[in-house]
Amino acid sequence: MPELPEVETVRGGIAPHVVGRRVVRVIVRDRRLRWPVPTSLGNELPGQTFRSVTRRAKYLLLSADRGTVILHLGMSGSVRIVPRDTPPAKHDHVDIVMDNGYCLRLRDPRRFGALLWSRADPISHRLLRNLGPEPLGADFTSEYLFRVSRGRRIALRDLLLDSHIVVGVGNIYANEALFAAGLRPQRAAGRTTRAQCAAIVAAVRRTLTRAIRAGGTTLRDFQNVDGLPGYFQQTLQVYNRKGEACPRCGSRIKGLRIGQRSAFYCPDCQL
Image 1 (cartoon, rainbow, N blue to C red):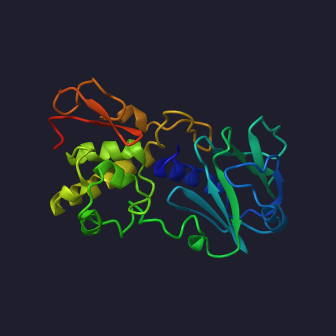
Image 2: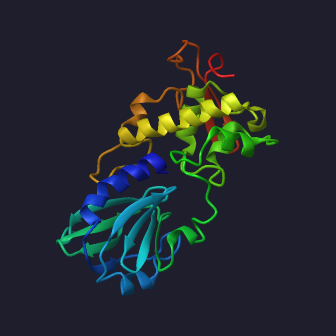
Image 3: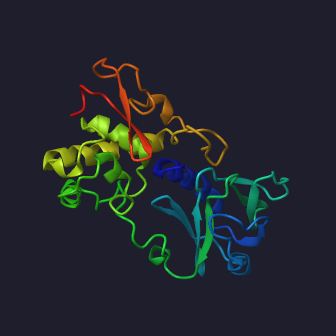
């Protein structure tokens, strides 16, 4: 599933092609995404101009004159900017046609994504209003993480995956950040000190920033707006490297299951 770095990469890719463009038409070939594409999108968006493309958690927000397109890529979704007369492929479900002869095309083979329309402030939408702080924002601090982790037996890795605590980190980046912070993913969150929380926050910020610069990570389906993969996978330190040598100390990286997801760590570098 695309996480924050992948979604931010897509945001940066489509923004120059979308902002300032007037929508001519919305073509919906299949409404059956995670939630049905609303008919109001096709009825209300044409004639409006996109004013900005922002991101909240893993949602892209395309703000127009009188509403906002809320886009989530789901497990396998992608968006491309293509000439409007480009023949659609099998899983190209929606085109937002713009006045420059191009369209924003949503492809989603598994149909776990979402394309919604909101006339109100999108931050108040039911999918966004209860989300935690952005990991690269000013609200995600060591003091905040220390406070919300008190008394929690949940594994540190799972705390970072909780979107009510912090958004968009994802399993790959949580594992990598905890390696950088020197803490095991299965460690109980409530056992962390203030200093360790500071190390986690710094590591999360550093890991996500590096991943954004690399265009995200490709392990399954992710491609950016130009159809290219992300390259952060080439720099992964522990994720999916069970049995390989730790790049820091040479010990063998271990793997385990926490809940339904895999986790990876160095038994010597991480406490």
